Length: 278
Image: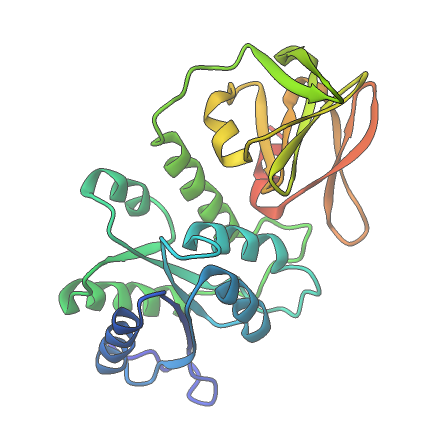
């Protein structure tokens, strides 16, 4: 099966893989299975994949899960956050993750719009992926306005949620021990309004002040109660009980106003589904 909806505009793909031999093998297999496919770039890490994805706006991204700089999941998440800025009508790309995950983890991919191929690349499995991509691209509609739901973003959000749920649960934090000057402040979880990533630290924002902890959001998230603390951006986790309202501006960007705190927090398109009317 060959995609030929528009011969003047071939389907364009980007490959992100930090092992050159594997990247070349994937490109070679794709050219054999899908001769009309235009591979517009091959990136060696997640940072480059994000930059080139935004610059080139391909139809398909083949992202290695484990890459230096940013993982394939992180690159996809940041791409979804930034894709609609300066919207030019280009639909969000189809995503294929290249992975060495086992069968248990692959269950998450089976129920998401994102597809996957296993390392080393197998023609039979890659052929099925090509067929799925061709079918999806034939039914792709123009990109939604910021006020509308973005289906590809939603599917990526569900995939990330599924993968996070498969991470072994850590003991739930009852108290945050945070540095304030030369002292250590003990902060009950109920007092936290939101967590904000700052390079190698997290800023713990409370109604009566702020404090720093030396960890990452990725390490912190499994220790939080998901019913109480919601990730709304790759760099922000908010206490749901502190949210007063979610408001869209004229550009369609979503932000939160908080109870008893002046901050307004931006919501990534990936997490906008949390604030749709019930």
